[in-house]
Image (spheres, rainbow, N blue to C red):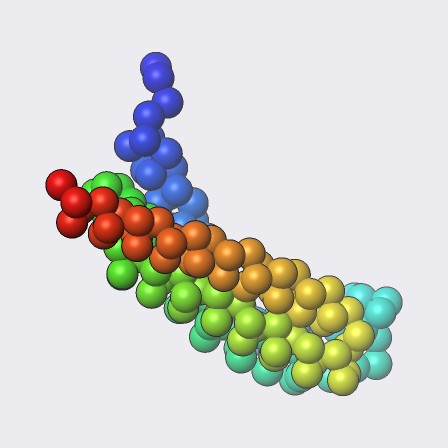
Length: 150
């Protein structure tokens, strides 16, 4: 079997669905999970689970937006609509949502220093997606220019 564009898009969709299911499970079980984490973690001992739960719920909103935008993006790519304004918008949203998670986790360092790791990773992902978005914008401009010359 040859690996094709369709197979890659299909695998990506499966991964998004799997991640969305895991995301929903974590959101549903968040109070329980944070309580267990605080009770069993050496580094979080003597902390309340409430701020952990708040941080996770505050991050859940932008993560949900990211999952939706990824679904839209991969759907468009599957239809061979790649360098479009909608895809650029999806990438823009994804980058801003990564920055939002970075901001929430950066503020959460007030009560738990290790949130800084998540803040750094989220900020880096936002930056990476921003570069990809800028590349898509440039490619769309070149594509539009090419379409007008034909």
